[in-house]
Image 1 (cartoon, helix red, strand yellow):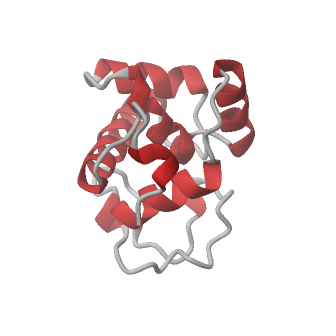
Image 2 (spheres, rainbow, N blue to C red):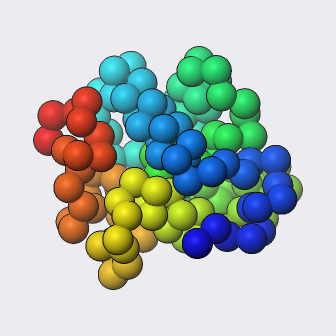
Amino acid sequence: MVDQSHAMSECYLELKDKKKLVREVGEKLVADHGKKKYYQPAEVKKATLDLGYQIDYACWAYCIFTSPEDFRLIHEALGEACDYVSMKREVLSALVPGGSFLDLDIDLSWLDWPDIDLESVFDWVDF
C-alpha cells in the first residue's frame, strides 16, 4: 500500500523503483564505507547522487540506512514532515513482499532485521 502523503510529492517512487534505489545505494555504501548498522546522512546523500538519483529520492535511502534520529533531523532541517515508520514500511514491502516484517521493530538497523532473508534482498553483501 502506498502512503498517500508521498503519492503526490516529489519523492514519490514506484515500489519497484524503491527496491532498485535501496539495493543500489546499499551496495555503494557498503563498497565505499564497509558494512555499518547506520550510515551518516552525508554518506547516504552522496551515494544517492553518485548513482544519478535526484536528491528528492534520497529520503527512501535515508529511512533504511540512517538512524531514526538522523532521519528526523534531516527532515526537520528541510521543513519536511516525512514519516520514518510509514516510509520504512513502504520500502520493506518493496524489498520483501508478503509482510514478513510486520512485527519488526521498525527502528532496527537494516543489519538487524530478524525475519528477512537479507541475502536475497542484498545479494552483494556477505552476511
